Image 1 (cartoon, rainbow, N blue to C red):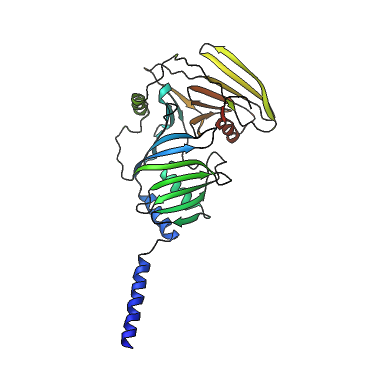
Image 2 (image 1 turned 30 degrees about the vertical axis):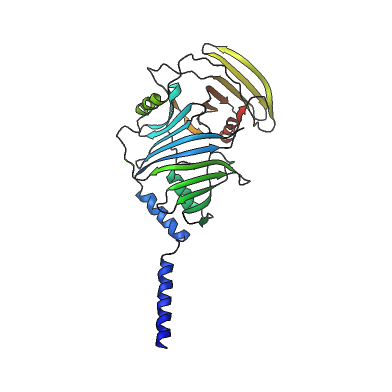
Length: 337
């Protein structure tokens, strides 16, 4: 009898020990994420981002620097189109830099606090912690959360965030549409949670100059045949009414007019750099707008962006910013819709 009791006691103790070494619960992981977020002082990350929002997939290299004082440096580089942009946040404001054109815009903005940001670790963690209807799962190496989103593009309804079990670093993010198809996929290749920075790493001039060393600035007046692009999305009740070429002192612009319930004008012109000895910095009373393939600049009733050797200017007093961004994201067609 004693022998049976002893065996039973040992079995119970072993079960307790094994249970203590078992998989963490969702609550355990959430607590660890909260602690990680509180203790995070800065990081450097690299990822590959693929977009399925246009007529063909586009791939970007993404590099993120973050320092706890609220300093950010996000570089998006499309190697196929030989173009990069930098989103920079420091004590002077928020900047959108286009090194190849030697141009920048400066905002007084609370970016990135107001919307989800798929390439920012703290934004992903915040989305996980705040969504009370999150879905949690785990396998041998990863924790996965499915959460709601707050992206500027409202077609991005949900996201799946995969984290490394060992250190909770980001592994993969898929942003899904209403049909659960991935529109944006990020695969993280590097993540340094203990990164250090130099004093000038987040200064505008230093980043513009440094980027130009690796990406030559376009020569002023550089001419290549411009491919005219058209929006593939037009709001209901609106249609194309006219298109024409306009000659200006700066070259040829192509002007498209759309009229109806929500009229707008789209102007496309050859991208042209300012002289390399100067940097053109404009103060924008608006905000940066994530178009996926590039970062746009919203000012008043207009949205501007650069892509593929062209500069675009979309103006409308009828369109809300979200719908204006939807039109901009669809400007990839080579024939009129």
